[in-house]
Every structure is written in C-alpha cells, then in structure tokens.
Image 1 (cartoon, rainbow, N blue to C red):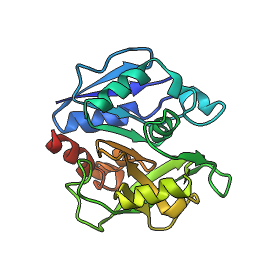
Image 2: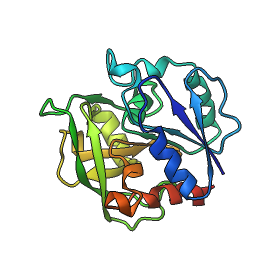
Image 3: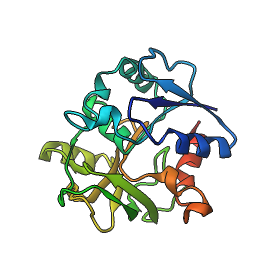
Length: 218
C-alpha cells in the first residue's frame, strides 16, 4: 500500500506521518504542493504544520495550490484522505470538508495531551477502535475552534459524520468536535495528532489503530 504525504511550505508533520506508515510496513512518499497527480497512490495524507505561515487564514493559501485539484480527483475515486491539524484546516478551506476554523477561545496556541472520544467506529479510519473508546492524542494549534452553521451541524449529526469529540473542550469547538468525515466517509479531518500518539516512546499508542484501520480498509 502506498501513501502520498502532501507537503506545502510550512508543513512540519510529514516525518511523523512517514515514520508511522513505514513502521506499519507500507510505503509513503512526499508530494510537493505543485504536483498535479495522486493517481499512483492508494491513500493521501495532509499532515500538520503552518502552511504558508497560516497567512491570511489557516489553510487558505494551501487550498489554492495545484495539488488540490488532484486531491478532488482522489476524493471522487473514493481514496482514503486524512487531514490532521493544518491538514484539516486545508480540507475545509478547499471545500472538501464542511465548516471552518476560528482562533482558540483563549486566543493562545495550545500544545498538550488531549482526551478524545470515538463517536463512530463504523468508518475506514476507526474500525480498530471500540465504540465510545477514549483515546489520548496531543493537540498543537492556535486556530482549532471548529465552527459550522446550524444546517451543516444537523447534517453532520444526522449522518454520523462527527467521528471524534473532545472530552474536555480545549479550544471552544462547536459541540466538542475534534474530527469529522465527509458524507461518503472516505475523508477524515482531525485536529488532534494521532501520528504523535503511535509509539510507546511518545507515551501512547492510541493513534496507531487509526492508521491500521486505513490499511485494513484497503
């Protein structure tokens, strides 16, 4: 299985993603933002960081990059797409996932362990978790406050697209939302970082099941 890890100027989480995929015995390749094809890959990852320095709005400039059209094509093909942290912000800015992000309610950058709950384990990203399981993923963001309008929220709730929620909301996200999927279920946007919780050396292996779930789905 081969993963594409998309890199923008300011991306900083690519090596963590590459390490996890490699440890699982699969291939991963860095893809620069100006490329125009993802056809050679089975799954796509948008890692965290601060693309373009989060200038204007987190993820907004990256959402205009050349690779985004290839990302739309990968979505149409039903390939698994994972956006973590800034990757989640890029997916919303590109209109691939609904909603948007506001600054954290405390107006401070937060970097800390976070308990989140698995709300839906019937997805290609969460099949290795138990329903209602609490996992420990760290967060690292200044604009992690997820927001959407009432109609979008109702749709997310009715379609079981809210996949992860914060146990103790650190940033003010609407309905404690930490991660959502698209309607088709092949795209996950997640603010906490499972790749930083995938090794005992980091204090937790809770994130490993997410990547194993993706691999098993393919």
